[in-house]
Length: 200
Image: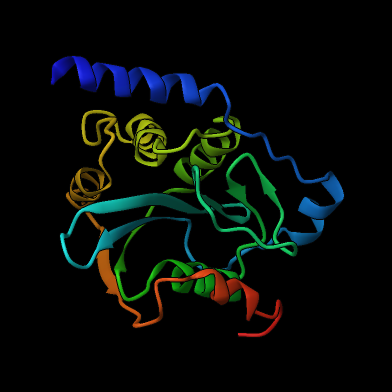
């Protein structure tokens, strides 16, 4: 059994070499940039299976000089939303709303954990997510937790498991939590197909 796990891990590592790099043009990123007037904040999203409670995906929204989402190895894609190596730009309230509705459906719900931080921590988080590079499949929690471990050393540890990361992040002082449920079909692609940019 141990040899099988080692083989699977090795395959995942080798697959990491094939992570696709996506790089939106400077003009698209500049045009989409959105500054949110709220406090500088980190928002950890954890997608959880409604039946088993197991974690399925992890991502991190950073509100600093602009608001972006680090969506490592994520499937959230739209022609109007520029992306650079798993970093989504132009996260207006409408984009944030469609992002959470895209992930919440009959089989999954989204745990949202918000933590207000200093402008310096937010700036560091923005730098870390933008310099991380394209994330291979199945490494969403590993990449996000590696970044958070640098921001909160000794309080958050690198992990492969979304639920474990949510539990550790939730222990940080000041974290506020909520859970979002939707009863949409498991085919979440229609959320983006039916979404019109600029409209809520």
